[in-house]
Image (cartoon, rainbow, N blue to C red; front, side, top):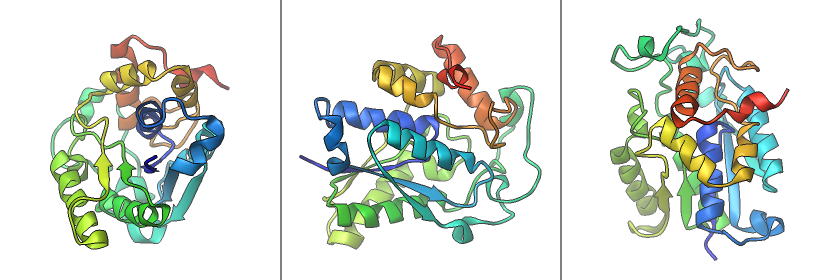
Length: 238
């Protein structure tokens, strides 16, 4: 049976990807055997919303899995991104105010480049044939490393670096062409356990619970659940 490494932040998208893997790769696998075939990897890159690291641990335990925590905060910390600096975070009353164009100030340069490189290192040792990440081109909002062209290029580079060929490890991006409402619908289709796990997921860039409701991530998440006609399970826990 194939093995999978999942880039796992503890957020909405990576949690949905986790259950996409369980449903598509291992639909009848006993929970006690999940650790044998699935390895989660979570990155501490100095993000201001470090509460998501706690979410990653909670969801991993809930799913009968373990996640490897890798601290790369010195590699990605810098004033160029609002997510990895102490600069004031932008907040707005609605999502449209964030869509003025250009590269968002929350863009972390080379983040997914580094994430996937390290995930490939883990995949090699874990003897995994697949890497899964929750990047999305539809809602990428100017994040260049969330596009399919980047993922295709990265898959080729990883395989050339590890095996000298372009056919060994496959990078899966199940959310690539979905908007946030579609992602919510996908999560709902993956079953009750997925929706229960989403209650522990964290998205808010302010790193607070309850979520601030005014940052870009909060607006995207809220819009997705609203448009899908689904109640966000994050509000079902205290």
